[in-house]
Amino acid sequence: MARSQWSSRLGFILAASGSAIGLGNIVFFSANAYKFGAGAFYLPYLLALFVVGLPVLLLELGLGAWSGQAFPAALRRIGGRPAEFVGWFGLVSASFIAMYYITILGWVLGMWVGALGNDLWSASVAVPAFGLARGDLPNPAATFFAMLSSWWNVGFVALVWLANLVITWHGAQSIERAVKVFVPLMWLFMAGMIVRGLTLDGGLHGVALLFTPDLAVMSDPAVWRGAFSQIFFTLSLGFGIMTAYASYLPKDSDQAASGLIIASLNCGFELVAGLAVFSLLFAFSMVPKASTISMMFFVLPQGIASFPTGQKLFGVLFFTLLLVAGLSSSVSLVESMVGALHDKLARRSRRSILVGVCTLGMAGSALFAWPQVIDPTLDGNGTIGLTLVDLVDHWAFGYGLLLTGLAECLLVGWVLGPATLRRHLNAYGQVKIGAWFDPLVAYVVPGILTALVAAGVWGEVRDGLYGSSLAGAGLTWGIGSLVVWLGTSVGVAALLAWWPAEGT
Amino acid sequence: MNLLVLIAIARGATLELLPPSPVQGQPVTVQVVDEEASPSLRVVYRPNSAVEREETLSFDATGEATWVPAEPGIAVLIAEGDDGPVATHHVSVRFAAVPWAGLAVFLCTSTLLFGTAAFATRRLFVPMGPPS
Image (cartoon, rainbow over all chains, first blue to last red; front, side, top):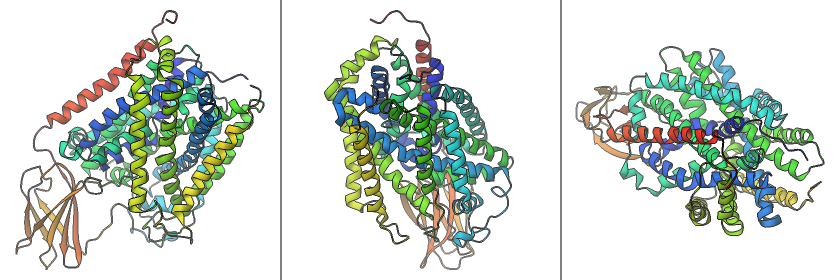
């Protein structure tokens, strides 16, 4: 079976950093930083990078280079079929995430189209599906809900899936070609947003807010929990992406240097995105919710709409930035699943697997885009689609990835032995990884991930199962979504893990 | 999640601040306009965050209150009457002096992150000998 290969180290670095840098770096980081006290959040976040982020990133890159295979097959080499099951479980959770992530990208595309016209910036928009007249909502929110409650949004989602199919058609080669354009564009557009943000009256005070430590708030354990979760998610850990991407490199590649570059560029991008977002928040005294959707579609566009001049220019720039960053991440989600399935089903052509994954993915994304209104008062999420995004995000993103990360650390830390992986990384690396790696992977990271999962479960027990209070269409949304996510992830992962491998 | 962030709850009353751009530790006169009753003033620091903090002030007979912002950042002022909020005002409280600690964190972090990226990139593209 011929596996795809990166044509250059630069291509791999751009692809891996493009995967890690996505919508989350631009909006989720800032929303989370605001939620946990801005300056109080930043230092714990930085510490989390070195304690959890970097070790797990190196572990996932090392697995790909050591095994030369995608995530499930790499884990299988360590612990047989039960370990392979862990890999598939992570990938199925990642597939759920890919489906709603691409739906959100479809909405970004819809808002980009809206930004090109005048509705988003000047004219009031009515939203008949929610019984809202012109002027009842600020324009960006009204434009968003008007799109969300129409079938147009499914069309936008289909276009984004088509873009993913085209970009991943030739595997690593076509992804490499795309990211060589996307990643520099991302940095360029972000630079434009920063310049605008910092030149606003009060913009610099917003930046100071993000970086000035607040020790009193920092003593709150919730801040630390938020920071450690953020670093795990922002580096795309637990998705199996880094293992898949690293498996397309020659075995003698320098994974330690690659890991350092990916982690520092990813967090560097969040730093500069924080400059742009916090300057905007402060200049216009905007109060965000700790939600990517709210920050992305209401708060920041509302800030851009308040610019004295150039709203349309910066609006289009902002949504283009989101599109480009999101696409470079979504192709990695698609590729990690396609690569793993191709390892398993080696007799099938890669393209037939890709078309199958994209078709199933599009069907799932269409559900997340379903425009039927179930909550006209907007006390909750409004439509069936957005309600599903909220719930699946909570389970797959909030638990699926952490559980996968925990299991992979235990497998490497206690079955393979972290020193084995470290020796492999050091054998081919100019940057040597010290013995600190071993206890972090075997004890510290599993301990922290267990604490994060336990805190989440305790929250479900204390406050009631997430989604229990969601009403609409006569469905029990909380327990229903948990059963669907867990049942599908466990069922599909078990089926794939025990399915006989072809042609190996 | 409730996605709507900015919901107008005012009943025609407004809050006016003097100076309009408050600075941490410096008194601000807050006046409620177009409201006959004398409501109380609730100040929410870091609103909508997991670490928000509140303080409550009273308006005097002329409808004015003196607020000394305790910390920089975004705050919401809510004038409350017997039946609930009558006016809200979002405001950004500026730092009183150059925040040297924040500047240091920013510079150190930027150097650390982009310096690491530059160092590792240089290492990655340097040819190496056979594996040890």
